[in-house]
Picture 1 (cartoon, helix red, strand yellow):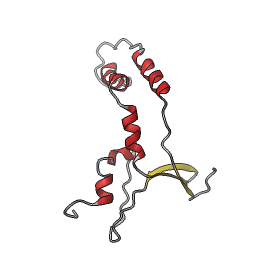
Picture 2 (spheres, helix red, strand yellow; picture 1 turned 45 degrees about the horizontal axis):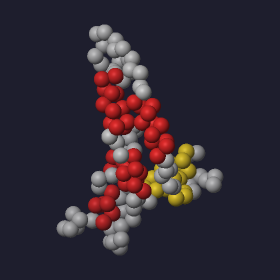
Picture 3 (tube, rainbow, N blue to C red; picture 1 turned 180 degrees about the vertical axis):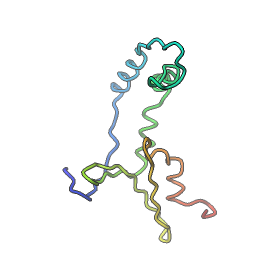
Length: 130
């Protein structure tokens, strides 16, 4: 569906098949690492291999994609057209009638996932209503 300015729609986090995960893992495990430049110990020429290797190792061999996708699926995702861009957001309304609405906005580069550990507590409150 083509959204008009200001319209929104529910958004489903796309599924990733086991074949896609295996292909990604295979590609990551097949990475050909470049030689490091001598006397360059910072990021002035891009991300150095020493910084990227642990991420590749994690994604290829340890990261649980299905667990992560299941976690994302627990929230209500939407997207809205704003200034001709499709903007993704999560809307988790409280069940409490006196709850104060709150909008959390992340910066760039970042995602809503920066707030994943507090979404449920903000929605449901805590035992002492703090």
